[in-house]
Amino acid sequence: MSYFLGFDGGGTKTDCVLLDAEGRVLRKAQGGPSNPLRSGYPKAWFAVSGAADAVLARQSIRAIDINGICAGFGGAGRPSVAKRMSTFLERSFPKAEVKVTTDIEIALAAAAPTGPAVVLMAGTGSVAYGRNAEGKTVRAGGWGPWLGDEGSAFDIGRRALTAVRRFDDGLGPATILSTRVLKALDYREWSGVIEHIAKDPDEVFPRVYPLVARAAQEGDEVSRTILTGAAAALVELAENVITKLGLAGEAFPLIRSGGVFGHCEFLDSLVDARLGEIASRAKIGPLQTSPAEAAAQLARSAARRAADVH
Image (tube, rainbow, N blue to C red; front, top):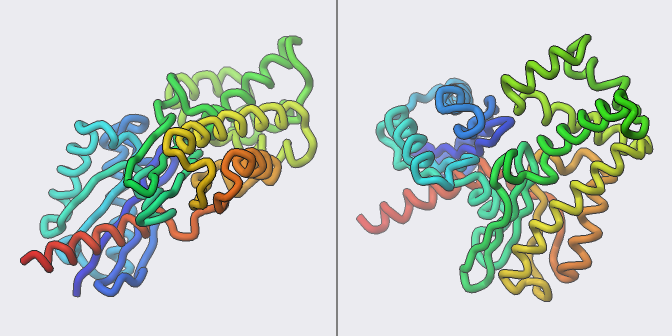
C-alpha cells in the first residue's frame, strides 16, 4: 500500500490528511500552530509530529509507510524556513518524497489545481494569492503582524482590545466587548492580559476575534466598525492581485479561506459584496476542498509522475 500525507500549517493550527494510493481520504487530524516564524521551530515540529502521529495511529501504519508528503506552512516562502521544515519531515519520514511550500500555495491548489483563481486567506495572518490563465502568480500581503496582516484575526483582536482600553480611559465609545474580553481570556485583571500579550501575542489576539464577530452580529457599533475596516483591508489585498493578473472581467474562482471567514455573516457579506463589484464574473465562496487534502493530492500526483518517469 502507498500512503500520502498533506499538511496545512498556520499560526493557529495544523491540519493533516492521510490519503491512500487511490486518492481516498483515510484519516484526518489537527495539531497546534506550525508557522515556525511565529511559534518557533520546536513548537512547529511538535505540532506537525502530533498531527501526523494521530493519523498514523488511527490507520495502524508507521512513518516508513508514507511514500510522499506535501506540506504548506505559513512563513515557508522564505527558503531557509522551507529547508528546515523539509529536513525535519525527511528525517521523520525516511521513505517519503517531501515537498514544502507555503500555506497559500496549497490553498490555491485547493481552489483550482490549474487555470485562473484567487484565494483571499484570513486567519492568524492575511494574504491574497492568485494565478491567471498564463500561469503567472501574484501575492499581496502576508508580511506578518508587525508589517501587515490587516484584517486578520490577530489584527481584529488587537483592535478590539485597544477599543476596550480606550473606552476605559475615556477616549473612545462604549462597547459590549468591555464586559466579555477578560472572562473569555480567563483573566480577572488587565495586567495578566498585558503580560500574556508581551510573552505570546498569537495566543491572545486571535482568541478575541470570535467575541468581535458575535458582538457585531448583535449590533455592537465598535465591533462593526472594526470588522468594516477589516473587510476593506482584505478586499484591498484581493483587488491588488486581481488587478495585477488582469482578471477583473474574467470568470474564475475567488475563494475565501481561513478562520476569519464563515463565522460572521456581517463580515462575510461585506467582503463578498465588495469582491462582487471588483470581479463581477467571479465565483465567490469558501473552499470546497481543504488545503491539507489538496496538499496530500499534490504529494500523490508527484509520486505518480515520478513513477511514470522511471
